[in-house]
Length: 284
Image: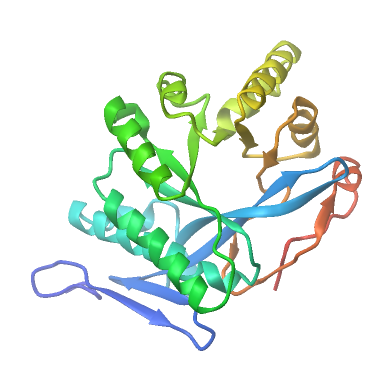
């Protein structure tokens, strides 16, 4: 019988908490650990951490797994359980980052029926931070996979979240075909430009010029533009020149395990664009 499975073959899940309060989960013989990637607010001469995004990464025998190894080992019910566990880790470990007033860009799938669970996560985290005397974050909600979700459902989800004081972030702009249809109907606070779309834009001067116009239009409508997938200094320059409000990507800072110390310093734009040594926001 596989390790971590009961007699009926269903995976069991166990949550562990270490001495500093960091939670991990075990499903079958995999351990899920929380990683967070900073998102930076663009200022005139610097980039400052304003938010983070969570990812639960699977480990086996202490070693990181391939991207598909963990989900491929689970059946449909177990995958749903894993999604719920990842959502729990996302909020439970957020307070261990050590910075007050930071936003958490939380995932919320427009096709998923677990909206009530997400709302409970939001409210529970606010309560927990209040108990610790910390300032509650301003949430963003990245709505994924809207391509197959009914438009009225996406609108209803946005209304429900916004009524609870949660900022709405529309994800995968430029890659998800129906984003342009949904965008004016939900009036998102944040639009996140997809990694693939932005990489394609950066290859052509004509598309770069159009991107400037696109960003300008969104900002005139009061939308915060977040560009993700920044991989090099050239892409950072294009995003900044276009007027992006926020940027995210491995060139700036990769996902790092919760429990690392997040530096409250800023990234110097001139140093980043010049290829000189940059401040790493996570210290080990």
